[in-house]
Image 1 (cartoon, rainbow, N blue to C red):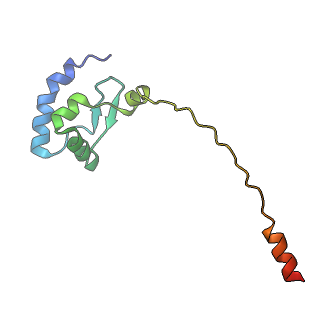
Image 2: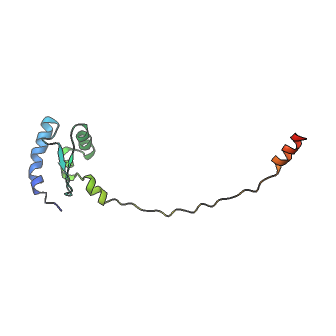
Image 3: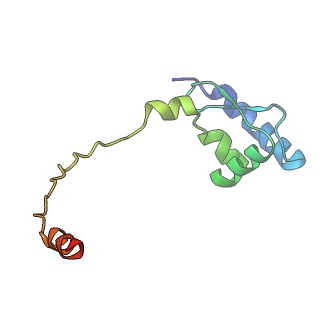
Length: 102
């Protein structure tokens, strides 16, 4: 796990910068799980800020793709076996074609 003390010291500066210029001084946001830095600027940054509920919440809780990949909670459901039902043929077609041909 990554030590986030550096990030905690920088967050107030980043929040102030974002509030003034509506962008961050760098084009990357660090993952809070320590999986790396991810590019985020422009409309992508604005949508992430809106989803998170503010720039400070985003910076404190951002989880990158690499960390999300490892924590997928997928459950596999058993499939039910499909049974093929055959319907007996009715001889109406054979009778109808015999009458038409005659």
